[in-house]
View (cartoon, helix red, strand yellow):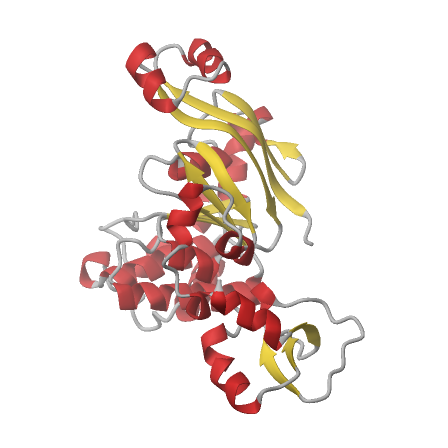
Length: 340
């Protein structure tokens, strides 16, 4: 497993006039509704503990009011916690003074927002250059880097257009290019695709996955959509009323929900459409590899299930992007997963 990039430890956030007093009520067992009714404070986050691994996409999901957007804004301290620690590369973000925090936001993290957050009076390339300009990068270098990422997200030729001349999906591509141009280690994406039409949303998800396979950023992705979470996430954390309800690998959450809340989330999911080979594979350990078929680790089950039914292999080999055997899936395991 990758190294821990972001460590969130015992994080609480209470909104109101006296959060330090209100937090004691929460620790004594008062829930979100009672805290608001009796003490006029809002429970944003309660005792969040989460390790986010380097070069992974960590999805944080939940319904409206679950605390997911509040949580992501703590990572770059757009919101200050009531209590708790957030460490990035072993450094506690809470210890940063204004200058260190400004440097951290500009160089270590980049954010993609739901509503694009583009400057309407600036062209596409000038929007993409903003972060580099703030860092004092040479204008020629800034423009060169920006053009590279504009091309990567499929907007070559639109450099001199203004945001109002672009569709919603194209505007979000600009937002993604702007974030990537900064070359930050950590990409924070707050409901980045939820304002887009379904087909455009799928295109953006595919663009993100393709870029991630090349760049290997640490991505924290907020969504309320389970299908999106299962498609994108290396790991998924599910929040409910400011608390962590379950966290783990997508397959673990889908196949072994620990609470009724999570069960309701996953009960209608089309498993072959959202589970990839790598989600359900096991490590090869002396198995007979004859009469095998080979699939890619990122293949969805639905893309190879017909081949399994027709060829009836004794084993399914899962290869990685280096074309090496990463693991295997037995037909029996595949059958059990589809029956659950």
